[in-house]
Structures are given as C-alpha cells and as structure tokens.
Image (cartoon, rainbow, N blue to C red):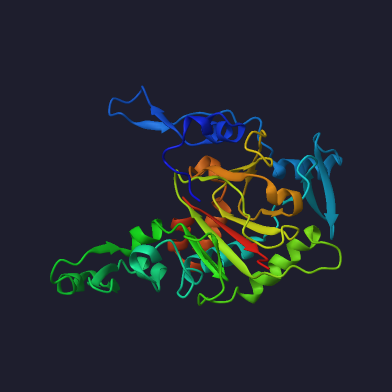
Length: 345
C-alpha cells in the first residue's frame, strides 16, 4: 500500500496523482551552504482543510466553511464534507492518555506473533521487536535451511554468527516496520482475509473505543463489530498511495481510522482518480470514519511532517517521556501511526 517508486505518465495525469505530487516531500539545494545541504521544498498549504481551526471557529461563531456541515454527538462536533457522503472527521477525538496508550500498544503488543507484520515475509515471526531495539539487540539468522532467526546481545553476535549467517539490528527493523495486523489477518499476497491464520484478538478497550466512534456512521439499529485492524507505521518521507479499502464484505459499515504521532496530510478523493481530492490535515488524536459512499472514494497520505515546527506533537512527546522514558518519545517524534479498524463480515 506504500507508494511505488515508479509511476506511469498516465497516472500522473489524474487529479489524485497531481495532488499527491503537489504535497509530497521534496528536497532542494540550500544555496547558503557549500556542503550541499538540502532543505524541504516549500509548498502551498493554503488550500488544506484544517478541522482543528474549523472546530475552534465553530465553537466561537457557529459558522462553518462552505461545503462543511456538522453533526453533534454528545455535544462533541463531528464534521462532514457535503460532496463526500459517508465521510466523518472527529478532531481531537482521542485524549492525550488514549494517544499514549495506543502508541505504546502499537509498538509493543500489536506486532507480536501470531499477528503478522511486513517483516514476516523475510524473517518469519519476530517476537519482542520493540524491547529488543531498546536493548540494542541484533537479529541473527541461525539456520539457513529453515530461515530461523533469533535476537542476540551485541557481545554474543560473533559466536552466534559462526558461518555465513546474516544479521540486522533490531533498531533498523523497528524503523522499517510498516504494518501489522490485528484480529482477522489480512493476506497481502491474496488481498483478502484468511480466517485460518492464527491471530490475537483486538484488545477489548480498542474495540469499545472503535464502537463508540463508529456509532454515528452505522446503519440505524446496528452496532459496529470490530473484527480486523491494520496498523500502519510511517517514517520520514513515507507515503501511502491512493487506494480503496475494498476487501470487507459490507461497505455500509465504517472503517474507523485513528491517527497517532506526527501531523500528516490526508487526501480524500472521489470514486475515480480523476475527481479532485480534498486535502486536509490529520493530527494526533483525530479520528476519521469512512462508510457507505465514502468507502468507494480513493484516499491516501502523501506526506507526514516530522520537523519540530510542523509535527505538532510537543505535548505528546513530553507525556510519553514522563510516562515511559525517552524511547517511545524518540520514536514518535519522527513517526506517525494509523490504526484502521474494520468490520470484516
């Protein structure tokens, strides 16, 4: 789902692709420095929807921008875009405590086997990745015949690597973690859910949180059933290309998407990539719902902001450091995590 390096000229001609290229992070030479220092290329962000500002203005004046409407749930405004029915934006839906909790869960428990991650294809199941990275451990290939790998302390590597075995540091693997799956496991090679694969259940607290926020987008008289989730991990320069989440059985049920960490740009297109997308900010704690017609809309993330000025996570960093030391905070200061919870059947 991450953006491919090569995209055809034909794809460049679509409105969605042009928006992706407009907002993607590019670098340019800084003429003030002789050592070829590169800086992020400035881009025009004036057209982005900023629901944080919209919420503040609405609370003061009860006035909304053209094309935006509001539904109040338990006195908490939920915003909609008139020409994208089924799309709901809940700014600041997650408390600071909830954000910290789910960041820690996403890094420690969610990638644990039997849950699958992008690393499974090369290394097989990897247990305790986050703790191993904290302890500066190294993953060593113990057996070439059955592709068995094991974490070692640095001082034990030489003994473990007798022969021509490969190795990779846990910290590198943590930074290259791109997705993990909770509940029913999604088979990326077949693009469907494989109910036969072993898995851990979605934590009950996360299920209850998803049900709470999904309620506004559910058909009357029905309750959301969280059955599967995909957790995406973004680092500097990472993007998520325009796509549809179309493998669930009933598109009338929403996808509940929770943003954690660095601020990002989210593109919400239409049912064709020729439809000009709405571009908007996603901040840590925001929740997005996509149900009904919105499930047929292309969407993606062309950019995350990891610089101190634009990431807007200073308070989150401080709270993570206070609660759990610096390792979580150091990770999230240049990262974004997105938890997408789905009703599969």
